[in-house]
Image 1 (spheres, rainbow, N blue to C red):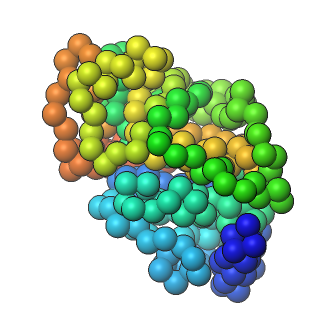
Image 2 (image 1 turned 90 degrees about the vertical axis):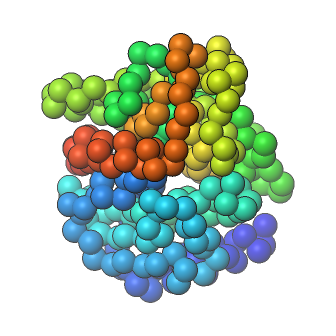
Length: 273
């Protein structure tokens, strides 16, 4: 824990040396969704590789930059690209930026991701606000000695995703006639896409969408007492009725097409905080 504390302080102080503001919230942008915050008034841009102890994004569609500035009246720190367990990082490294965001002062976390559909009622290109998740990752970011300065040893997870933020986002979607569902996100390690049998299994256990990110970040944010909102872009359909093959390029294309809708919802949501 002493090493983690030291690393967090070094990363936080480096960012503070570049940016004097205190973020109201942090935003994590998933595959193909880097342009969601293009209307943000950017004051500082920092490459991940320059931040002490930060991992570096290695996946197409993840720019690997930290944006700091103003968006719809709020101070924002935005990650253009995230890190994944399948890249070879530990879950401690994957979630390190979330701890840094909290240490910078952010009390709310907004997460986006590109995911696969499990619910036949949710189609490619549609959005889903996450109301709960199922963790099928093979590790847990809170494993090991507890960081008492951030949260309890055994954090409760009955209401991880903020209901007020969920309802506001759905209201914004209705106002702009954007199809936006509610559902349960299943988190897996990746990097392979799922088999038809795995898709069926995840649907049977209650999943509406599946992806290779988000859950570790959310577990850590919840541990630190942050308000959490997550929205998924459904980029392929793996439901048990008609499972089809999928490529990363297809996922990126679907996410890119949905960017304007995600941006509209998040901009109004941020303004309401």
